[in-house]
Length: 111
Image (cartoon, rainbow, N blue to C red):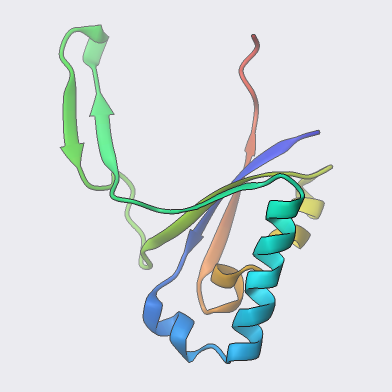
Protein backbone atom coordinates (compact mmCIF):
# COMPACT_ATOMS: atom_id res chain seq x y z
CA UNK A 1 0.00 0.00 0.00
CA UNK A 2 1.35 3.48 -0.80
CA UNK A 3 2.91 5.45 2.04
CA UNK A 4 2.76 9.17 2.68
CA UNK A 5 4.82 11.46 4.93
CA UNK A 6 2.79 14.18 6.59
CA UNK A 7 4.13 17.35 8.17
CA UNK A 8 1.86 19.22 10.54
CA UNK A 9 2.36 22.92 11.15
CA UNK A 10 0.65 24.88 13.91
CA UNK A 11 1.23 26.89 17.05
CA UNK A 12 0.02 26.52 20.61
CA UNK A 13 -2.02 29.75 20.61
CA UNK A 14 -4.11 28.65 17.62
CA UNK A 15 -4.55 25.20 19.14
CA UNK A 16 -5.79 26.75 22.38
CA UNK A 17 -8.37 28.95 20.60
CA UNK A 18 -9.85 25.91 18.87
CA UNK A 19 -12.98 24.72 20.73
CA UNK A 20 -12.38 21.74 23.00
CA UNK A 21 -14.86 19.43 21.20
CA UNK A 22 -13.04 20.08 17.90
CA UNK A 23 -9.68 19.34 19.55
CA UNK A 24 -11.08 16.15 21.11
CA UNK A 25 -12.33 14.96 17.72
CA UNK A 26 -8.95 15.82 16.16
CA UNK A 27 -7.13 13.72 18.75
CA UNK A 28 -9.57 10.89 18.04
CA UNK A 29 -8.57 11.19 14.36
CA UNK A 30 -4.92 10.82 15.40
CA UNK A 31 -5.85 7.78 17.48
CA UNK A 32 -7.57 6.21 14.43
CA UNK A 33 -4.42 6.74 12.37
CA UNK A 34 -2.34 5.12 15.10
CA UNK A 35 -4.71 2.15 15.22
CA UNK A 36 -4.25 1.77 11.44
CA UNK A 37 -0.48 1.51 11.91
CA UNK A 38 0.58 5.11 11.31
CA UNK A 39 3.78 6.30 12.93
CA UNK A 40 3.08 9.70 14.51
CA UNK A 41 5.44 11.94 16.45
CA UNK A 42 5.88 15.45 17.76
CA UNK A 43 8.68 17.37 16.10
CA UNK A 44 11.87 17.78 18.10
CA UNK A 45 14.75 20.16 17.43
CA UNK A 46 16.10 19.65 13.90
CA UNK A 47 19.73 19.25 12.89
CA UNK A 48 20.96 19.77 9.34
CA UNK A 49 23.55 17.30 8.06
CA UNK A 50 25.84 17.94 5.11
CA UNK A 51 28.79 15.90 3.89
CA UNK A 52 30.02 17.32 0.56
CA UNK A 53 31.54 14.50 -1.51
CA UNK A 54 31.64 12.42 1.70
CA UNK A 55 34.73 14.38 2.76
CA UNK A 56 33.62 16.94 5.32
CA UNK A 57 30.78 16.30 7.73
CA UNK A 58 28.97 19.48 8.72
CA UNK A 59 26.08 19.81 11.13
CA UNK A 60 24.03 22.86 11.97
CA UNK A 61 21.24 23.19 14.49
CA UNK A 62 17.91 24.43 13.22
CA UNK A 63 15.67 23.80 10.25
CA UNK A 64 16.72 24.18 6.64
CA UNK A 65 13.19 25.02 5.48
CA UNK A 66 11.25 27.91 6.92
CA UNK A 67 7.53 28.32 7.47
CA UNK A 68 5.14 30.92 8.82
CA UNK A 69 4.03 28.31 11.38
CA UNK A 70 6.28 26.07 13.45
CA UNK A 71 6.53 22.39 12.58
CA UNK A 72 4.40 20.54 15.11
CA UNK A 73 4.84 16.92 14.07
CA UNK A 74 5.23 14.23 11.47
CA UNK A 75 3.45 11.05 10.52
CA UNK A 76 3.99 8.14 8.19
CA UNK A 77 0.61 6.88 6.97
CA UNK A 78 -0.65 4.37 4.43
CA UNK A 79 -3.48 5.08 2.02
CA UNK A 80 -4.65 3.72 -1.32
CA UNK A 81 -4.04 7.07 -3.01
CA UNK A 82 -3.55 10.77 -2.37
CA UNK A 83 -7.28 11.42 -2.07
CA UNK A 84 -7.57 8.85 0.72
CA UNK A 85 -4.48 10.28 2.45
CA UNK A 86 -6.08 13.74 2.34
CA UNK A 87 -9.23 12.37 3.90
CA UNK A 88 -7.27 10.66 6.66
CA UNK A 89 -5.46 13.83 7.76
CA UNK A 90 -8.21 16.36 7.14
CA UNK A 91 -9.41 16.18 10.75
CA UNK A 92 -6.14 15.86 12.70
CA UNK A 93 -5.15 18.63 15.16
CA UNK A 94 -2.98 20.72 12.83
CA UNK A 95 -5.60 20.66 10.07
CA UNK A 96 -8.47 21.82 12.28
CA UNK A 97 -6.65 24.15 14.71
CA UNK A 98 -5.71 26.89 12.21
CA UNK A 99 -2.60 25.06 11.07
CA UNK A 100 -1.85 23.05 7.97
CA UNK A 101 -0.80 19.51 7.08
CA UNK A 102 1.40 18.78 4.09
CA UNK A 103 1.25 15.34 2.49
CA UNK A 104 4.27 14.02 0.64
CA UNK A 105 3.93 10.77 -1.34
CA UNK A 106 6.80 8.48 -0.35
CA UNK A 107 8.47 6.53 -3.10
CA UNK A 108 10.29 3.81 -1.21
CA UNK A 109 13.83 2.98 -2.22
CA UNK A 110 14.30 -0.41 -3.83
CA UNK A 111 15.92 -3.06 -1.66
